[in-house]
Image 1 (cartoon, rainbow, N blue to C red):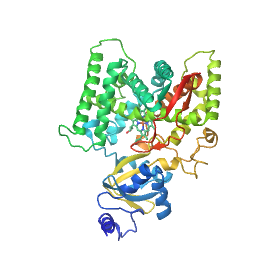
Image 2: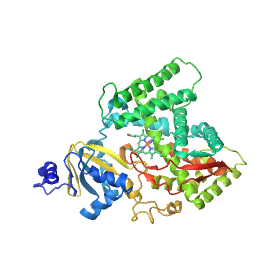
Image 3: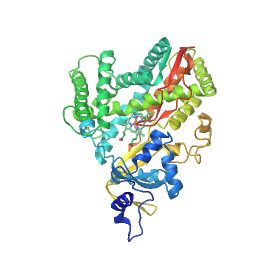
Length: 463
Ligand code: HEM
């Protein structure tokens, strides 16, 4: 009775639709919690997250869109390539908002908070700062010594938890790229602040002393203060001129001579740490994990990278131009990103009613653009759970299938940077080191993110 009442509560306005439009199939679940228990069952208890979608396909048909109630809101899930493409096509700009609930943590000018023309404007600056060929080319010079140093220290330890090491290394790397910060005490302080900020996103937004959210707001202020002081130093011309993303954002001028304000730079620098750090660290851990589990792939990767080093006459550092000849490495990266499914969904709120294939997506409901299931669907990838870089030899999957970096207006602006990091990382790893998992059947944890359950504990040694 309770489930029927809940169903009626959300669906009755659409039961007798005069224009033949109906809600997508599905169920609104129990009052208040909706279908959260089923979600948790798949993601936490059975560790089969895609069953959440397969079950709905089996029960309601393969419509690619379903209604549900999750995380406290009535929600439309889109999961077919066609539906995901439709919602991130031209319709996205005036029908969807990211609906991020925490302006105090992200800042009102952050790229993920702003919409419409303002988003377009900020995004142009961010793309220019982190994605331009000059800035990517520079990362080859600045990042590789850090990678080499980190791997040397991993080998000295002998036994490592890859997730922890990748976490620390990626944080240093992102701070070096964004701000040219290298001092260990400063990085440790920033990482502590960052972790406090992150906890705020998972907490109730109650800004009272003693709450995690209150602490996170304080962390955002502390992080902003560090960045602001660096910006002031640069404006006062203290120290040498730095070539990093912060300087790019500070110097960027658009065609009408317009620059980003101080607040816009601050909010977006904080956002770049948030967006670029954990996702990359996690992808690095997965790369180490899969390569340890598939030694024949690692061997082929090694051969390609060794050949590249030999062609360079033994020169140790990779260049942006070398990447063009790293054909197998590129396939390994695509395969790691596909199977690791680091970003499972994109969250949006519907700003107006949207029609799709005779279904109505009501204004005010949440939209969950479900990316992960297409990446492991046997209709698009043969033996989808097998780690097989050779699958990328054939034609590319159809549009809307492989969206590891999202899609549409908010397609990840750091995708090229992240991929280049992986090229550099794999080059130095596979040429100089070998590693062996302590627990080959460690399994996966899916909440809050898809991670190797034991953090990929391994023996790591120099070859
Ligand atoms: C393997 C690593 C990465 C993955 C899997 C990834 C994935 C994604 C995805 C799926 C989105 C879309 C989110 C949405 O639309 O709701 C996104 C957005 C974003 N990513 Fe990444 N990302 C990665 C690395 C990076 C890096 C290294 C940076 C920056 C240095 C970055 C910066 C951003 C930003 C700023 C956005 C927001 C774009 C906007 O709202 O217009 N990402 N990322």
